[in-house]
Structures are given as structure tokens and as C-alpha cells.
Image 1 (tube, one colour):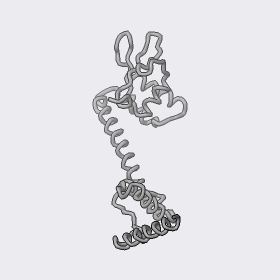
Image 2 (cartoon, rainbow, N blue to C red):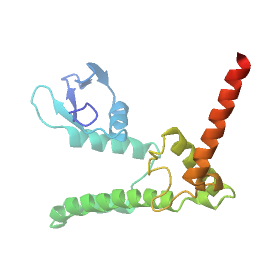
Image 3 (tube, rainbow, N blue to C red):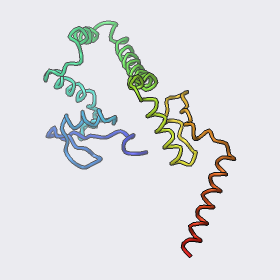
Length: 189
């Protein structure tokens, strides 16, 4: 399992210092927030008791960002969260939040896909010609093994007029080139 996919273990010492077991150095809450933003899963445990403190530290990171004016959570949502800790809503809220964030992540992925499919740059003059020249370049560089990801899905590059020549025309050009090389070789003697 690569380091990027396994959970990063952070140990909290009695002094409340946080120790990154992967790099053997001390880290701050901002460092931990950076690991999470980079896509890492993080687990924070108390060294002495073994208690999982991840939840508390994640809430602390959120509280610090919110207090710095980097508000993501509207006041109404925070109020509803506080209310959810009492009564029957407590059992429903975690599932609701988890599914809401999953829908958000899924929606973001679909939006990114749509942005590439409906690329705003495609409306620019010359964009199609640029795409076609890129496609021809990659086709030439890969000897015809052209990666399908160069153009948006379902779109094929139009072949320049020169590429539609028949095999016979190509063979004729090769023969002319060979004749010219032979002539040059005779001249050098």
C-alpha cells in the first residue's frame, strides 16, 4: 500500500504535541489540515491511553478556520448541528450529512466532467484547428498509436487533406525519395 493511500498516524504526547509517525517529526494543526486537503486520511491517537482523538482535532481545525473568517458553514447549519445533539435527530443527522457530502463530491466530479465535455474554450476561434493539429502531432509521434484521451469523448479529429492520400500515392512519394537519394549518392562519387 503506498504512503498516499494509507492512513497517516499522528500521536499526541502528554505535552499535547502532535507527532507524525511517518516522517518522525512534530506537526501543527495546520500541517494536519494540509495533509487532509492533499487527500490523506489522518488518525490522531493519544500515546498514553490509545484513545482516538481524530474527531476532536478535526473539529478544532474547523473551529480555527471559522474563527479566522474562512466561514464555510452558515450560522443556520451550525445552529442546527447544535440542536441535533439532543433528541431523535441525533441518529439521523450523521447519515444525512454523510450522504449530503457524498452527493456534493459526486456533483463536483460530474461538473468537472461536464466542463471538459462542454469546454468553454471550444467556443474560441481556432480551437478546433488547434485540437486537430495536436491530434495529428500525437498521432505522428506515436506512430499511429494515438491515445483516445486527446480529444473529448466521442469526437474524432478530422484528417488533414494530405492524410487522405491513398497507399499508392504514398508509395509513389517513397519511390521518388529513394530515386533522389540514389541520384545524390551518384553525385557524391
